[in-house]
Image (cartoon, rainbow, N blue to C red; front, side):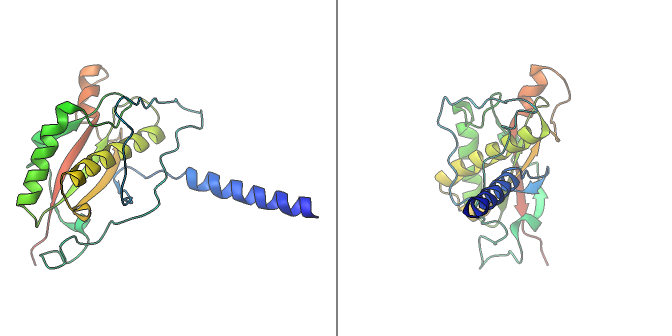
Length: 203
């Protein structure tokens, strides 16, 4: 009897673990944000294990700070993701990534410093960071990688003094290419983090 009960508990635990590990956000879904996400250390290669290996599960996310206006005394009357999007102002600061990596490259530091300076000078605006990937790899893997890229950018901005509540993230995986093509020239432009300002709507 004891053995039977123990097996039942083990099977139930395994089912819960597999169910939670298999969750992947759909493209464009706001990512529930952890209090503090640390990207992999520099030099760490994140390889795509390929389809069917069962190793494409995204990093688990356990806490959230999405949906709370960061400036409760300011113009925000609702969640910041409901703001009017502006994808033009910070477009020149798009951050690009190496293949299978969410590590911020040194070449991108200045762009992130410029974005942080802009946000500090426009405290009424919020920011959505959109993580993107090139077309290679499975949809599930690329959604997870796009999420890690967006979170790494967000963490960098927080370390530069930006209020964590001022930045939300989404992942599009490979669903939103910036450049059409099936070569490195296109792929290098699609491995990116885009910046979309969210401006509070006027009554």
